[in-house]
Image (tube, rainbow, N blue to C red; front, side):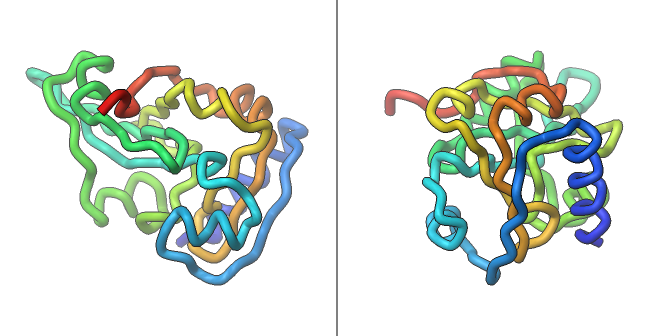
Length: 163
């Protein structure tokens, strides 16, 4: 399942001449743990949340990406996408839309029904981003500007602030 995602991802990065490296590592359960293993900062992690935004008469699947040291405000995400409510999707839906398990989803959408949105704060602190690359045992560390150029995401602020 996830090897296919890794291959799609590296093919996309190679085709776009991105500056990246692959890190093989043991499975880590939390962002803090995997950041230590990758030798990166937690905030460099590009956390990808698979969500559904409910609108009055429809729904939109969304892959919402933000720094791993931040929390998503799903109410704000829904409002910024014209929805009334947003929630995380089930593991079955995650597998169908991303071909990955929770925690292994890269910050790229390869499914036509999965809208990619990125919180702009992701680019404010670090020159490189780190993320799981389709498996829990493999990460990619990617130049942030290459990600910005290649991902073709919508830029929407949806992180929790000022609590």
